[in-house]
Image 1 (cartoon, rainbow, N blue to C red):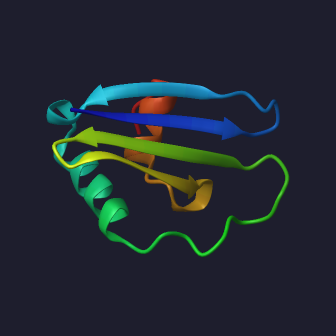
Image 2 (image 1 turned 120 degrees about the vertical axis):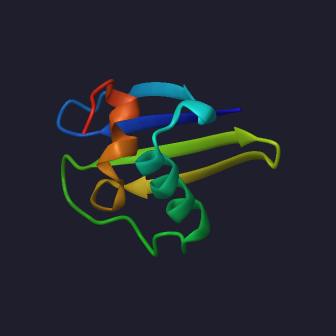
Length: 87
């Protein structure tokens, strides 16, 4: 069971990807992920050049679920998984 976070876009248009076992998520990351999974999907992406877009994929006992999240709505605690940084 794992979480995959992929960040794309930005000035250089590069894609960064990271993954983490769901059991290794911090309580803050678990709460942020649960909020994203239970919330309403974003109505639309925010326009603007050089913005990042995040794709989250959760593989667990419920199957595989994925979401696309605009930069402004992505929790920093989860965004760091893609970039290898801590918030």
